[in-house]
Image (cartoon, rainbow over all chains, first blue to last red; front, side, top):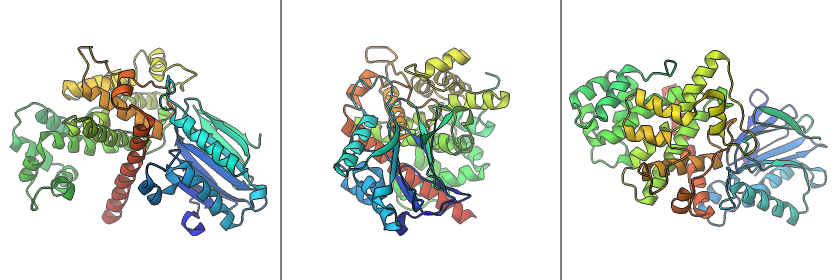
Length: 172
Length: 277
């Protein structure tokens, strides 16, 4: 499975697209995903091995779309998140040392609770983590801003860029 | 307005002819045949399996008849807009291709929503959604030439309000003016004008087309297509929420389908580039 998601860096960067998942053990590489709207980006990093991965999922549940989930499991939280962890474990990452972060899950203005696409994405992610005893080291979710998320595999540093401003999400 | 990007003369002439009702087919053929890329795009679509016409045609005139004015306008503008959109958007904090993805994504979503809602002219919905953010193109072009920037969305203030405060206009209003300057039909200009705030039923300006384009735009926001410093700081019109996007199931279906559609188009483009290299 790892081979499918193991991505080589181009000019030091691995771009993770929408509904996409990538893992790497190249300590010089940076994983980056752009334009997180209601979608959520999840990063996993093992500081001991400097193995890391990133998922950019769009929707919370694959239940209503089994065909789409088969074609691209990274589209959904319930199929993409387990795959991200499995791919990192197969590459040599250890669950006990993983640093897990998340960003995205924005909403349109005045949603009034009708859709809450971003909130539903955040809720299912927390449920998955709770069920599997995974703690979020840091997250930047909600609001109305579009975000860019990057994971630098040399140190595990996570950076967020939104509304023209950048900041380090982890380590805090 | 003098700084707004022009539509190349031949394309403007073709669009003007096609949107004028009775058009001279020979004149349209003459104009299209001067543009090799456009002529090959017309032949390719006319012969595509998706178009479903029996037998192949190598004649440009036969292709034009086969396609009809609405589909032809769509092809001409899509062909012309692509290079304009590819590199634009930096003033909005968009990367290369992002504005193109937002435009094509909206167009695909609008076409799908039009089919689901029984709106007859799918091609018109596609075209209006494709062009809905040309006002951003105009502001981007102006700001890049003056080294200006657009203030990012803040708090609960809608992004259109921020554009109004900063520039005295917003990209929807500006886009509508640009479309009118390009000679596009009034209905397209209005669809661009109202793509963030369509008039509600009962208003004499209400048009289902505007609701469809608005819904397609919101689906793109959710999917993160074409969103930059404006983020998701726009509202969904309540009447569109009740009629076109009644619940998260349908909204999520459109978001998923949008990804599938965009991926297919990007694969086709990559293959085409590989073949021409």
